[in-house]
Length: 416
Ligand code: NAD
Image (tube, rainbow, N blue to C red):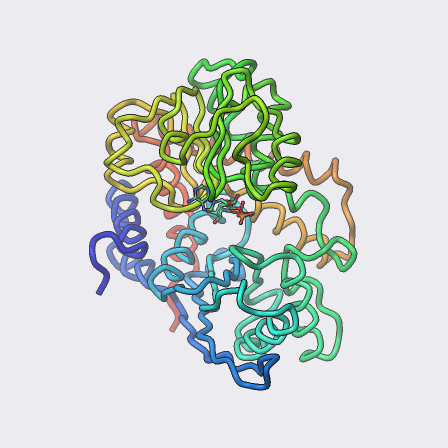
């Protein structure tokens, strides 16, 4: 049984909130509270030193009434069924909010990737996929990258699936390298989507992006691209951080130059002309827009009343705790929730799947144009609900996502 603050308890509390708003049929509420399928496998591989490694693998498929399951695979030492189930549930709502024809899933293997060689990682990936292959497929469940898995991991997944089927199936997985069917624009899609939402939200709250001060926690894939795109919009990036710590400059930082420095030294800290700050200081820094793009549970009841930003765009999954949410809402801070703000990645994953199914390859311009249209539509669908229902954006997004999935269940019925 989940205790109050486990990821699953938070996800279920969010579902309960949306159910209340929607006056949801209790039978559908009950159905959506649990995943359709949870799989646990034991991933046994030969290690380089001739011993055997045994790793726990998980795949949770929440609900697929709007289309096949879709969700990332993460490799991380302490993955729990609770966390994977919560993330699968959030993926169901995220796909529905973006209005793409998928249900939510998530998977993972409990492993510290830093302790395995490339060969061991390849064997781990292939073995894990072979154990769940009957539940995967382009019309069943389509994995994607997540924490500590990347385009190379997706290539191994495509090859394993294809070898087991006997023919090439690029549409069985997304986030692949472009040369084997990956989409243009997938790498920067999540950061781009975040900034499309920021642009829309800024126009609603009357915030001029030119000169707006932006602070970004996390400088990986999502954080860097969000920083670069905000910079291109004329924003002033005043603070950036990574796992080591952060840097601040009232004059503004050039994300590209900070990236070069990070690649050379291993961290954004000690960047020329900037002041070193801690991650805690970054969150409370004087800025207009705060973009958490690293870990969950960063904005809590301890620091929510010290946040100076007018807008928070949740690029990371779950960076704000429910208590902090309440404080930020009372303070009238515009918060763009993760299930809306970071959906650019799954949207371009959907584009990749469509291109693979039709054996087409779209240009970067086409992908970017379609991404902007989808993100802008999703943002405005959610915004309309905030106006109609006088609710915050997270509640509105959940209401939209859960409502669309519930409508599909109602229409399809429960068989037999
Ligand atoms: P990444 O591994 O590329 O980067 C993570 C960054 O966070 C790194 O710069 C790391 O140094 C930093 N970091 C780690 N611990 C930190 C700490 N304690 N304080 C500050 N920074 C810290 O990961 P990513 O793909 O950029 O993902 C970032 C977040 O966005 C995650 O929450 C992920 O679930 C979410 N997300 C990513 C995508 C995607 O397409 N990559 C899509 C949706 C959501």
